[in-house]
Structure formats: structure tokens, C-alpha cells
Length: 268
Image 1 (tube, rainbow, N blue to C red):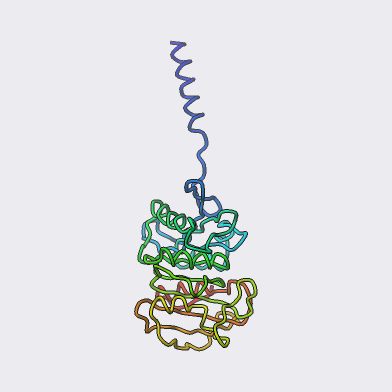
Image 2: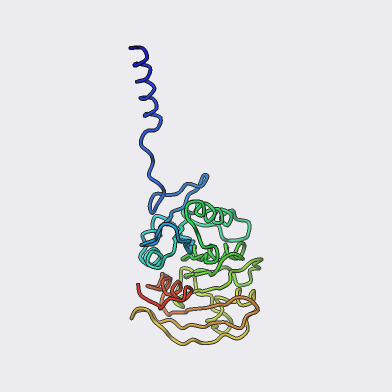
């Protein structure tokens, strides 16, 4: 009997050691592992745990990581108040390879969405792709190569070359850029044309003349001149231009999510 008890004790001890303390589930600053890479996820406030969630896939700027994005008031602060699941992939070396179509960052980002879909019920009709600076250029690259299932591109201060050839496109493009930006320079067109930053998408979607939507603002510091292209063969393009430099304007991402979901615009 004593031998049996000893063996039993050893068995349970080894079992407990094998199980041990379980790692915390990936959430917010704790990354979700995806092969050799990772991403971060932030759920919206007051989610009931079962309703399918719209998704914002956001690419961080140069030398940043997803840990910043899930804490960023102008990004995470917007998604968590609007019922949107935030996904923030981590770039290799804290940057992105967006320069040409020969990049595996597109496949990685697509895999992030699929992995998140195993963890959360997502609304595939409302997948939005966003980014800032280098991350904005990466968001452009993603929808250029893999955009047919994307509801909208929400891009901040970063583009691809306007002569790029894109095999795919999102259903809608929304871009904001400052004319004083000297980090990812504002891409002025011929004779100082300020509608040039979205020429690639206007050409891709077969858009004709743009319509001025006038000047609007979210805070007293930022005035935006909006131009929209509604008469496109497919899709829609919206461009907001301001006179300042390289930053994410307060409330801009929140405003786009409100408009896309048919909500009354609010800040924050």
C-alpha cells in the first residue's frame, strides 16, 4: 500500500509540474503568436462575447510595435468605443516591407485576420485596414495586393507611388495627409494639385471629377478640406487634406469609423 501511495504521489506531482501555471491568453500588450511572428488584439468595450465584430487591422509606424497601437488613444480609443476589434500586427525589425509586391508582409497580415477569426466571431463584410506613416504605406500595399475583401482603407500620412499597378482594391478608400508633411512627403500633383495623393485609387476605381465637401473639423487645431469621388465605376474615394505635418489627427480614425457604420460622428 505504501508503494502505491508513493507512486500515486509522484504521479500527481509530475502531473502538476507538467501542467504548471498557464500563460495568460493573448490580449492587449500580450501578443498572439503566429508562427515566428506575432500580433496584438484589443476587444471593444462592452462586447457581449458573441456578436460578430467589425475589424480594424492597423499597421504601426516605423520603429513601433503593436503594443503602442492597442494603447493609442487615437486608434484603440476609437475602436473600443465603436464595437470594433483592433488587430495590430508586429513588423519585422519594427518596420514593414511595402516597397514592392514581393513582400511576405501581405500574407502575414492576411494570416493575422484568419488567426483572429479563430479566436473571435468577426464580421467579414466590415474589415477595415489602416496604418500611419510607414504603416499607412503598408496598408496601401496590403489592399493593393489583397484588398478585394476589404470594406475600406483608412490611411494616415503615407502612400505608395501613384503609378503603382494594383491587382486588387478595397470597396472604399479614405486617406488623410498634411501639406506640410516632410516625413512621408505630401504627394503634390502637377501644378500643386492637392488631390494627387489618391490618384492611384481614382484611376483603379474609374473615378471622374471629385466633389468638394468643404472644410470640416474635429478639434479646433485641425481643419480638413474634403474631396470625394462618388461617380466611380466601382468603389468610392475620400481625401482629407490639412495644412499641418506628420501625425495622426485627433478623432480622424474615429470619424471614419462613425461614417462607415452610419453612426452620428462623435469625439472621441
